[in-house]
Length: 392
Image (cartoon, rainbow, N blue to C red; front, side):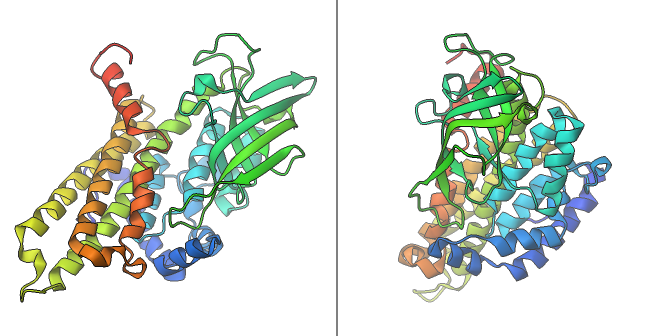
């Protein structure tokens, strides 16, 4: 369970990444895991955590210095999430905001970058991500939310579901259909990517009853003929899905960091417990039945971590990092789930006591096998793109 950086972290980024881990130590003192769980149980939010991230300058990480940011690209953004998850406080709103702003930064106008990307560095702008729909699931080509051009504005109608942090975000990065009903959609035509103010008339939220031991909530978001200005469209009319893919690759990597950080947190708790728990006179950690699952989880997480930073570095280098990003998400989420399972088994019955804070980790790690894309879809993508197998 080394904290050393894998060789896939570029040399020029290593100093910044190391400083990020140090900064997160300070954040954890202001907003520890105990407060994270307390807010989760009370249905509250982690506003102090957000403020601590702003104060530490961590929201500026990943934004180029030319835009006033701290630089470091996706490698540094990944390090922020990994470090925060390692201390048990992964802020979902951070991940949503960082990969939402990536599409705007890459494909938006200078005015959109100034209006929406720059304010994220000071915490003034918070984003949620609007893609999934009740009937479409992960098939974006089946979405029904539409954006109809009406003079100098667009009118948006439809519904999104499982939108995390919609009550805390002030804007949503929304994928909508701009092609007329019945017209064929492709990767490069028929979609629009919009920056939508959630305070606009016609936007409504409905909270979903999901228990996952985190101070963030999930919502259905409804759009009833919501009027947005034409400059809410990111890039060219029709190219929205193509632009979205840049966010999705960075999303995969940041989600891997989230999973692996929590997996490390769970594994460390199990190791510490196995060293002192001795019902038969010697620590249970001396038994191979306890040792081996923990050791295997550690090895698998370190391998996934190496892939994760390789994917981030490839993304920053401007190459197609789709395969690596998907591998990182797949391997990271699976390895973290194995770590949590091993931690539960090591703790035995005490793992299910809330205050022990072991089984509390399971729902969040388990959902990452499904979201933001299920691992079966990742395997199909890799089978087709990397192995050349027929499309599933």
